[in-house]
Length: 341
Image 1 (cartoon, rainbow, N blue to C red):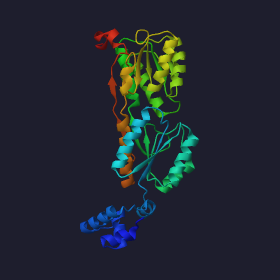
Image 2 (image 1 turned 180 degrees about the vertical axis):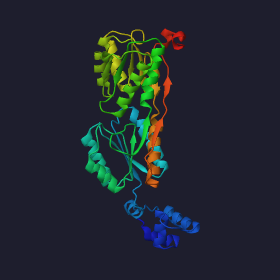
Image 3 (image 1 turned 90 degrees about the horizontal axis):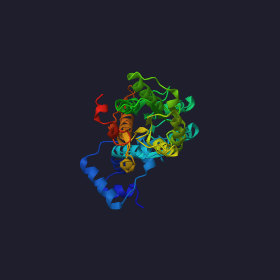
């Protein structure tokens, strides 16, 4: 296997020059750079990445922790982050916390041990231990929070307009004439869940409709919780429901079948997030489309910029949603006159 000395000999330069070119650690003329790269290609030389990272004080790796990689929301988020990281010269290491604080802490410590240059984190509900937060700060590893915020951690954030999503979805149902609108929320303690509930409440308040506690049920963003929440919620006979994510909607539709109710004839529905297969549902689902790939890309871009320029005030980037009106909201049944109200 060729080594750096073989490259230097073939390029007719010193070992120091080869090192400077490969590590980009000093100015080297274009001619010498060309000779070194030609020698590397001809010999098939593979640089020692560990040695290079020690020389540059960077590993060119980023860590990313998501709550549940099996949730169809997150693969698109990860793809956006991965593409952007790669364009910036970084490799992404991905972990799934299952919203478990202990598991999340294990991965954060692993990322520290592997000397990642930065971390993208969708936080499990709860705080980062003070000792671990201090270790991250001492190591100079910047964190970008993705989607969820956490008290006591002042850092860059890329988030969705969660309140705006539910506000728009519930307002759409109100304009169609529905008044007993139920809400199935997400994981307890997650900031995304709280903001989507805030949007639901704000929509009803704006229309001077009293909030009925019997029509507000908590889930955990997974299918089974949507089913259980649906069985509970449907006892209150809502005429429409807003559901905080797609997976819980799958469970809720099964609860509807258990009650022998039809959507939208008996219960109208709007949910959060959109996927290409939504057109395969019967009825087709009205959704608030969340920009998944853009979310991951924005987080990676913010992190790369923070690594390159440490210091400065934390930044928050909030992305816009888009409403996709289909059949489940009952717009075809209610007609355009309702929408004009």
